[in-house]
Length: 217
Image (cartoon, rainbow, N blue to C red; front, side):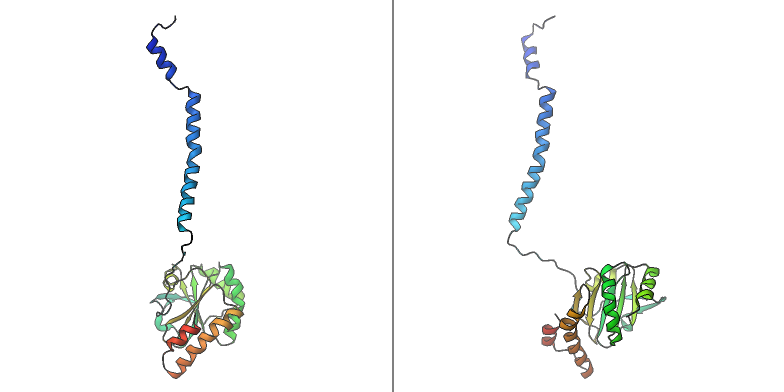
């Protein structure tokens, strides 16, 4: 029976069909990625030309951070700052899980054979894997401390293993080498720094600040 109520007929005609609703929803969902993309482009544009710096908390020019950590070769013995050498040395952060440490290791062995004192910091490593690593490749370290939590390495200013810190006779960190040590950076960066530190240590004085600034960068 036909509906004789004109108002009701108008309401029914004005109601959107399900198809129109779906099309409208699809348009909205399609616009969301465009809005997000536009927002990112605006942010990038605002940053354009501005310097981007990554600041790390480094212990450079400060004493080696205070620590009390087990000796890797005998975890019942706790090592502290007092056990560190009282002459210039290298502090190398390494791990058996670290591919670049494997690449670096033969050169560390060469340095050890040349009489360079290297203190190892075994970083976030399984002790069994660490022993196997040294047994297979040789042990270039005068001692290795076990930094299982990684907190000591973070206090040093580690960004990722391997990294090496050149420390003077007063146990102050004078140089930070990011990445592996090789012949190039050994000759060009580390050796000049060590020469200044060793000379000061032999004379019983502190390294000259100007020389440190020039050669230990």
